[in-house]
Image 1: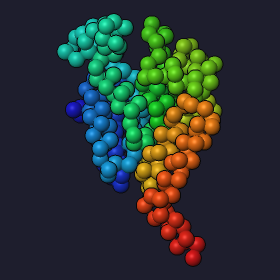
Image 2 (image 1 turned 60 degrees about the vertical axis):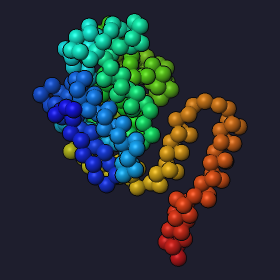
Image 3 (image 1 turned 90 degrees about the vertical axis):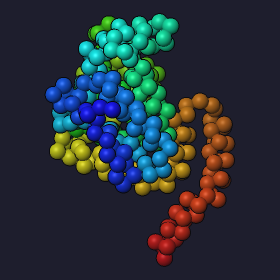
Image 4 (image 1 turned 120 degrees about the horizontal axis):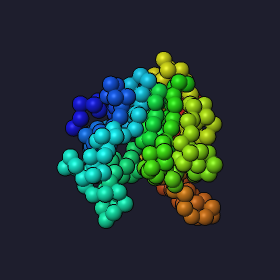
Length: 264
């Protein structure tokens, strides 16, 4: 576990706060491992309805800690193992990083991000996995992969064009252009821009709204939204099947009763 990840649970929300302000929340392998453990445990915890990522004032994350990253890439430190692109299937990223990416891409729990300040590298690509996000107006998003002689990571080469369109994704992921909070919102990468002072309250309010939704209906809806495959008739049929099943569910019956009670 890492002292630089503060983990709290309240009201159905698992909050993972990156807390390494002296390094602008540059992520170490230990920080990745701590977040992965918490996300993995949350998958089987019915009390957790949503996962919320936060940073510190002025820094969501400045990306990977390069010294720690290089140690992993060279096989040092006992955890990284292997070179980039070799038989280790990306082991140069470090096993902790790969485990974190598997955890966020495979999470069945909705994920929310509250971003203030720097969001560099994984600080930006993490947002592509989140279901909702709030960003302060002083935030700066950048992915300098190519400038470092690297390539995009975290599935961003697939998710970026799907979310933002090819040319915006190219500008971000290949050219390494800075995106302001408003530019990121216009591109569809983030949902809402607020002041730095309001950021955490807005992010918590958003996570709370999600946590109060009927969990199974939300899980199924999220699965449908995230599945880009199939034809339109196939999707209509899949939705109709689930819709019919949900009409008989305890969640739906309780929601209908509450609706009619309010109307009465």
